[in-house]
Image 1 (cartoon, rainbow, N blue to C red):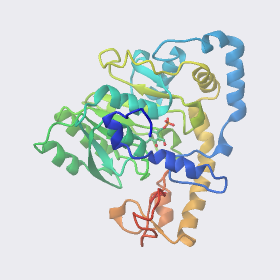
Image 2: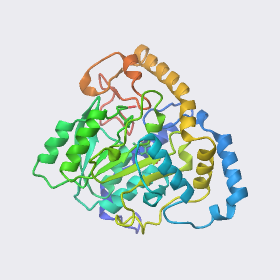
Image 3: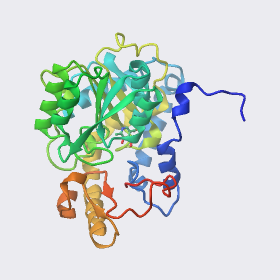
Length: 357
Ligand SMILES: Cc1ncc(COP(=O)(O)O)c(C=O)c1O
């Protein structure tokens, strides 16, 4: 027994699902699809090393000193140009915070916005790390069912028109969703934005996977659509550089006005300088384009495996029934969502093992 007594809100947190997932992935003989882990053999280690060395050589003292709380300015400027070119989101560097991964960004969002009992609308299923961050600030999570095109607008309408208290925000993963792999169609984006704006509910858009697109055109961020309500946007370098850098960006409508300013949490040092150095030399879009081919062929192998040898059926979305795996795989990018046809272990015997991967 410890003399420390946990805050009441922590009593709600039973264990970290992410920790459970990462524990399994540490075993060398396991390829886990439970988390969004990039393939380590594709990490650009030499280029990152060169960028870090150049930083130390050219700008070492500044990179190692305390810095502005919002993060390294050249990287924030680069983020703005990157978002304008990819998801058509216009933002000024003043409204960009560099965080230690999007996970910290999600925690910051929850810390700044949520009071106990506040309602947050989320897709069902949704990213476990976000659910945990919102839950740890004692939010009430309200699930909105999704289908092949993402969150179902008529279900969102039903919740928004109910007499329950107005939700604090709507949390969405618009592209290549974790865990389902689906993307919100252009029509759905418009419907959702219109509904959220009509009800004055801001949108928190978590977009770590857009850069992993290897076919088709990028769709505009929800926050970039005409008539969009206030929005927060999260992006990360984790998926196409490497998660170990812990570099991500949180774009807020007005940093000062939203209470983010006093938060001393940002990432401005060696990792931020090196990421900027990397992104300036080898644009992240060029890197993503180079990764498209290995991603595509791996997906084909995985889809084939699922067809031939797994004792389970890959299904997405669960409501859509069985369809040809290959055809579906062609539309997916990163996440694979599987449902056990016959439960292999019961909820009680699961022992922390995820039921989807
Ligand atoms: C939807 C989603 N948001 C956020 C994160 C966290 O990413 P980061 O490594 O930037 O903390 C992940 C990681 O898998 C994710 O899937």
